[in-house]
Length: 119
Image 1 (tube, rainbow, N blue to C red):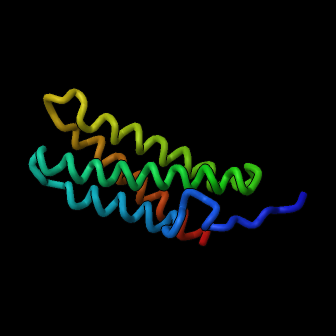
Image 2: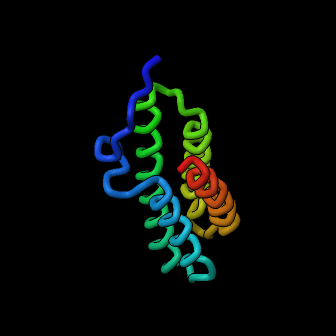
């Protein structure tokens, strides 16, 4: 089976690598830590946008590789879980669930290490 080369310009990664997108989301979570709810929402939205771009990038890598990159599939599953947690941070709207934010950050720390190991 011939392996396809993944061209970053043809993927959802655009100018950013998966590692950069992951670090962007982690940085937004770190900035949000301890903020009042009004300010926290802005950082959570920033993290969510980075996660969506990361997810799209990993999907594009999967498609370009013909689904043969098992490690990237694991990372994609972790990013999707983090997105689910992010969606739950502000619901119910009467309170902010900071434990979801911390859980998402821990998942992304692991994803970042995996991405770095893959190169």
